[in-house]
Image (tube, rainbow, N blue to C red; front, side, top):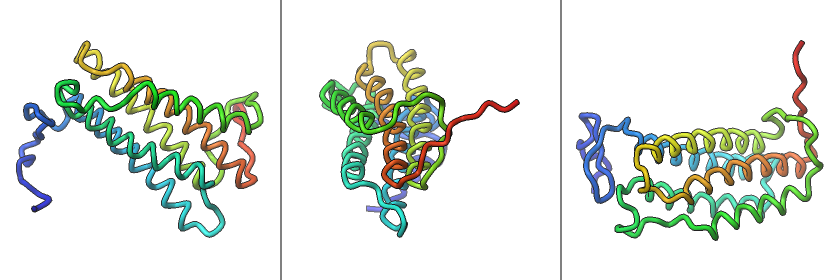
Length: 190
């Protein structure tokens, strides 16, 4: 099977079990941004395996692997106009609860935040901070899509992305702490 079909040469793509839409359609923007987030998480994970001085803690790497799989599920749900009828409504309250448990577990090991921090530190932490910002953009795209597709999208999608961005923030801090790199506190410029 060839990777190119030429079907998208005019700026349209097909949804799963649905119509063809423009490539800048809100639905394509939403799942495209989720795909971008997944790629950034892959960069965070792959960077840490090749950097001699930094490795992601095994628990964080395993957690991110699971999240990458879930993001594919979430993307397929967004790519389907009627996910319930096609069996692509994969994101569940249990997955959200799992993110919350991970946030609580890692945050309990971190010093309390008293100030805003800069997205910086080790390269792995910086990639996780970038992933957090892409996750927030995906969330914004899904909010816009939800307004257009009233009642068609699972509310768990938005909740999952919201919790995931929080988790990525906590994981960036945890990666810095694991490497002995303190958070860089924001200082107001005068």
